[in-house]
Length: 404
Length: 111
Image (cartoon, rainbow over all chains, first blue to last red; front, side, top):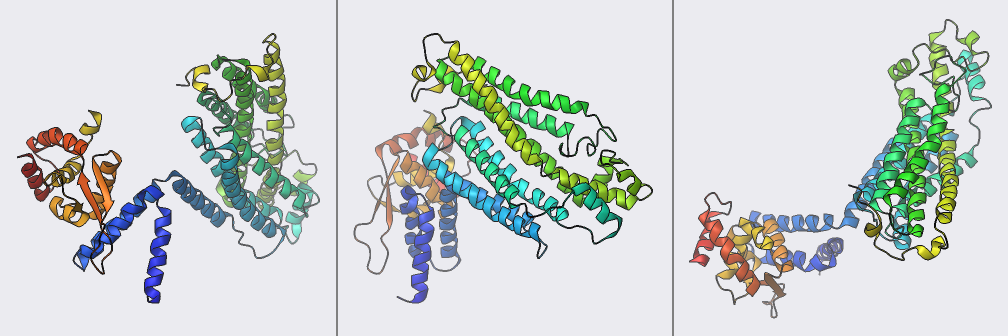
């Protein structure tokens, strides 16, 4: 057998492995039949039909489709996030971010499938998985743009003074922050994969409630503080020059109100035994805070990154905002539009890292609230501890009113 | 029956071609010539028909020397039953999308 034939055989066997086991005979059948077709264009067309069949059967495998989708999204994120600068601490961090996040998300998807089982809870579960994965992947290029600005102090002049004044001691060797960021993202992905898995046994209604409440919370936080709350109120475009942030009060109220509302709604939807109800209530609260924090973080970091790359957006957002919150700044900025623009850039860039605090605090708040809620629910069922009242492997649809 | 009503004109032409000699095994290329369908269309139809139990498939026992074994197809009793009424309705309806060859096969099989 010639080398070419061996190579062709190996390629054919490799292609066949892509096709589900029950369909391999059919692909082999098309190939075997090609010998009966007159050589030339007709045979080529016949083989092309075989290739079409392979593509069709391969893409119909859900796991292959999802893997290809993830690979495409990861490649896009890596392409967008890959640092252009040759050296520097930010470049090392950016490279580590891209590689680690892609590897982490891929590994978690495989590992949790074995541990938690496939996605359950209908379309919302699948939507949530895709949305959270897309959000984490989208966060990496945005975060990298910000880090490249923070790691590039001006060489001198007024900009260097502004940089030192606004960013404090500088970017420094903050590997600990990076490890914390990666750990938080890993926990977010794991939590979402668990909540949306079959083994979590959450009702579709619970997932819908948590997603909607979390979306509303994230949008509200983004609208109130589109560039975050790290340097508030100085960097808030809606409150120029204000030392008081009344909207902050609204944001904090929402931080508590959104998960509580979701938990109450999930509890009202559930009509069966207490153990299952506690599960639904806790999950609804946690899901609200997770999706809300992630949405606010991705939107805010994305806006800061866009602002750093697009001067028109920066000018539109700030509209001659003087950054009165930073002491001694006004003197430097007076009559210097270029310095003013740079002060906006560096201030917003320093506000991006604190989004990590949001990602940590939101779920903690939800867990505390869920703890109180569970205690209240367990106490409301006299003589029936929660663990005994749960239906093992029970049909959720029997206990939850329809989400539609 | 819902299954029957979902059979496309192309699927019917394949069933009709198989009905011509229901006890015989047919090759894929012969079916393609009879129906005028390309391999990329014919085989997904055969797969669906086999999944529904309307067609049975097997590998040739004794291949010709120097040739790979060929896959063979035969209509089942369910396939015969499923094709007949719907094929009659299809042949009565003008504007069917089956090729002239395929339409002729359907007519012959129903005559």
